[in-house]
Length: 291
Image (cartoon, rainbow, N blue to C red; front, side, top):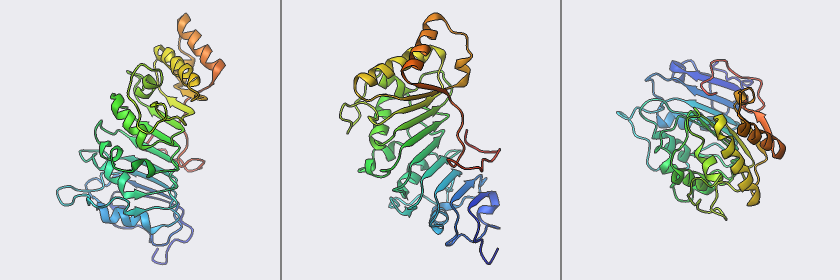
């Protein structure tokens, strides 16, 4: 591999391959990069930056990694915008362990004006606050259209409002979590929870939102209906709803069945199934860390 890999487009690095046995990355044609499972073989900020900037064609990045060892290194405080990835269109991040505050560091460091899709997995309640509150953050990802939460949701409407203000261009939101509670964004759209979104003309979440994908309980169909009715009245209509497939087979009482029927008559309602990643790709590893 010393002569380079001129035809390599997808690279998946795990464990020791972060440090050894990896192909040359400089000026490589790699479009899809996976960084996963270092198991205490931390790559650190500098190597992380080098990985991302070595391939100018990089369009899809998946991170399931702790990245740094805080006993030996801190994420540089002056790193905002320090990792230019000009062609990045989709990004997935999961940071397991005790260093999850690095979520904000990673998002602030990456400069990706073409980013369209962002997937975040298992983010603790407070660890995106610094990103949401950073000055000018609403201009950071101007092309972002799709946002996905995997295995978590916010219970604070104030935090959801900050999120919507930080990422104002979202047209599709996916929230995959245990449906003990309905997604907080749904409660806000239905008017059941109140928090004004800075920068929104009406103070409501995501004026451009047209698609909601989520896992809910059958008892939440009334809440979904209220949200759809309210958004339509405000001129901010939801057009597509994707919900857990089990709801279509579940036994419902008369009111629940009426709510589902109403939704199917007024918007497109479909079963929620996992999309391939990257979007449109034929490569979909079985041992994927993301749903």
